[in-house]
Image (tube, rainbow over all chains, first blue to last red; front, top):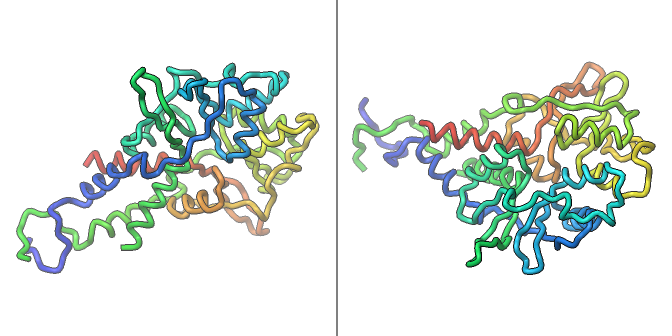
Length: 161
Length: 161
């Protein structure tokens, strides 16, 4: 094949360019602000926080603001089906507790996190930083909404070119 | 610039190739099975269906199986905070009713739907087919989970090359 001038040239295939672009999308570029509640909160408090802050996932922290658990809309809905008083039921009873919480770091790729969300069948996870004691500070929230925004970003970015 | 042999050649830019690939991803290739409930169902019935079927969005249909509304996990959680008996509260009271339901068609692009999910701030929508009376049959369900799967699919497809 005789190459002609005027074509785009990078020395890379379309697939390679694409892959690089996807792996460049990092959690820290798309993450949302985390919403935390204390472990002493009731299930009723948690439902209120969820509506006030308009989120689908809450992170439960201890007195030193370290991550100890996570609750989803689904967990709270399940609790609300029971016969218990939601004001009297502590959120720490129904939360998913550490070390069973799936987490991610600010430098993780969005692709890696998307894979975790699908394989673990969860809607969102905390973005964390490990402290010197091996405990975790919550610094962000990454959900399927953020993945959907990344998907739109990719499509829109390319169409503008 | 003097072109050299041995490079990938398509006559298209990486951006164009990418855009084509994104627009080729259609709703019908990624949609899930829809879960419907009758308009006579109670909020309690709806919550039970949501857990039995493990979905976050239910479609409400009339006696002729035509779409009349949609309920989300968030709608049901809000209802469960109230003081009403969930068994006595009809789902048709709290659902989002037609024509305010955002819908999509099997041939819509995933990018278009992702845009709708973000701009309307919803988690999922029905995939519909219009009948000869201008009413809608529900033939699928498209959620942020499906968008996340499409995101993973794109990344994984390209990395395999």
